[in-house]
Amino acid sequence: MFKKILKYLLISILGFILITLIVLSAPAMWHRWVIYPRLEKQVNKFSKLWKEPPVLAQLNTYRGVMHVHSYWSHDSEGTLYDIIPAAKNAGIEFIFLTDHPRDNIDTFPRGYKGYYEGILIEPGSEKQGFDAWPLDSAIIDWSTDKDTLVKKIVNAGGIIFYAHTEEPHNWANPWYQGMEIYNFHTDTKDESLLPQIINFIVNGKKYRHWAYREMFDEQTSILALWDSLNTQRKIVGFSAVDTHENQNIRARYIEDGRVEWVGPDANIIDTMQVKFWNRWLFHSPDTNGWIFKWMIDTYKEGFNHITNYVFADTLSVPSLAYHLKKGHLFTAFKSLGDATGFILYSQNSGDSISGITGDSVNIEQVKTLRAISPLPGQFRLILDGKTIDISPDENYEYSWSGLKEKGAYRIEIHIKLKRKLIPWIYSNPIYIF
Ligand SMILES: [Zn+2]
Image (spheres, rainbow, N blue to C red):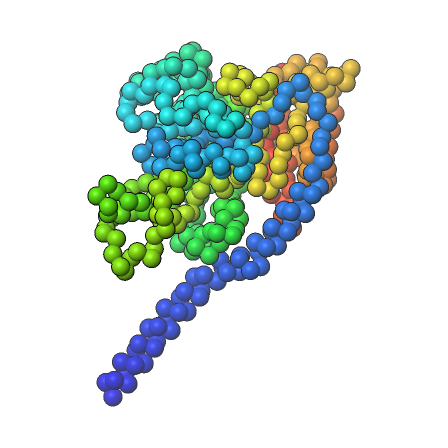
């Protein structure tokens, strides 16, 4: 009798566990076998529609990621062995790092700086809600009052943008030059952890880029804030990948021959001897010495998720910095399609270009606002936060001559995926005064 009860109890517990596992992993399985292959097909088809747009600006377009962490940050282990191949894979030409400083006194240059296999890396800091790039030999004292700090960095020729714009900042500060209009980390904050982790377990290898996109939500309140700030003065908008490559479980040998387990945020979680029972877990060390790796976030997918496209003369820090501060950039979800060739510009009555995205242009000099795209989409013209015109769904070109009002005019391009329109490109505004 007792044995029988025990047997039924065991069977029901096992059954319960099995059912829970099936229920929990069902959405991820559905993604793997149905949704992601379909999306993959759609995006491949979409990329075949890519048409080289005419070159209009006297500037080149450079793809870059900003707000990235490397080994210099306490919560990242990323080295060039990880960063450079990832950048090459995503067609990234420059990386503006934002490492967490190790101390209040933060000296530059530090970590990586210069060209690595042709990819330009510039060191910077993320601290106290700032993305700061002094761009020169500099000492930042992070104990300085925030507003004074901003002014100092700007006066010394550096760049200072607000990071994590879902958090409070002194928006009225007259010195900061720009803000994140999209940050991948910000985007993930509203997700429940367990389903996402299960999704990465099931889809991480084959469809990690779609697992990344699974967390996407349009950042409407941040965009609205950006628009409202732009009615006062130019606030440059850019995207932050915020990649650390640190939501992972990895292992490596330490000096005494034991194995050290490194968990999320690059924290050491355990140290153990290699024994017969765990030996099978480890492979020979890779270039960074890892003998075990299970990854959620990677530079590879991070860099391909969203990218800044900067109009500049050369791939150099002075040229990129100059144009970044001018707002001569737009940002696009690169895993959906390469946006190189997009431009928003204004034309005067003589049909010559009077300004591009980020420029301030006298209303007398604007007869038409135009935009072109290498891939077809729906153009939305936004004036001071209000959508004032929408094009048909599959346009390569956009033109608007209804100008009556001064203000900040920007373009969004939305594309169709899963029969839904989703944002692909955000331009900086043209400021018409
Ligand atoms: Zn960060």
